[in-house]
Length: 295
Image (cartoon, rainbow, N blue to C red; front, side, top):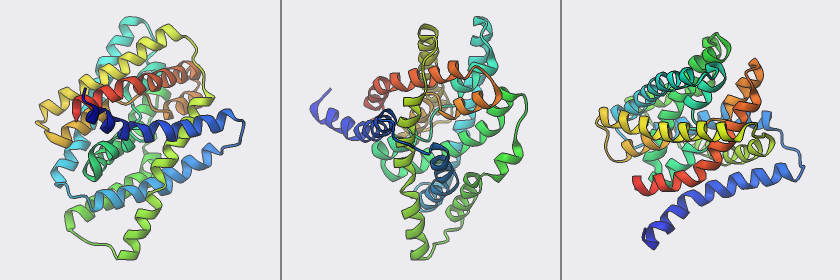
């Protein structure tokens, strides 16, 4: 690996680790952090503005953007089918382990990595993947965990409607007034830093229950995600940045939101939290290698 490539990788991953490390250190120091409030701001205000601002003016073909949405749903379907079979053969509870194995951290980690590695085009495609992943998590993910889907809740989430607005802007070629465009960019700019700091805070507050099994499951999440992303990107004939973003987003560690669902529905939250922590820790080793391959 050349020195130039090492420097390029460091420029991509260092901001991620530093921002998450700030959140981790903040939580460890005992200072207060209103994670619920921050998550609400990020999900209901920051992320919708980021979606409209980024996707709406992205210089990327609408068909490619929609393909990233389709790719996400295919990755979810493929990993859910495969991991459900693995869990059944292993005798593990699917309601506990299937959601964190399937639904990756396409927001907190996927978005900034796509931005730093592939620029504005990469961020736009990663946002398409993230929106599709969020929709699947709010429906299929909750159904698996709780035994019922909250479609009404998904329809009320601002992220979904922001995606519709962004798609309309993409298709119609409508331009926002400068003041509105600047406002969306300004507010959307808070999203990624807050996501990363909140990720660090979350990692500082959850513990690993059974390390051996959890490590194997974490490797399954990361390795299976890469394989699924590569297969879907190949089948869809994706190339360049689109291909790289699909594989990168598919390779993210388990999403922190899985812990919240496990706590809400009483599905062994300690086990799920352990999977989130270990898969995230391992991703600090696997993601630089993955980026080296993709770049």
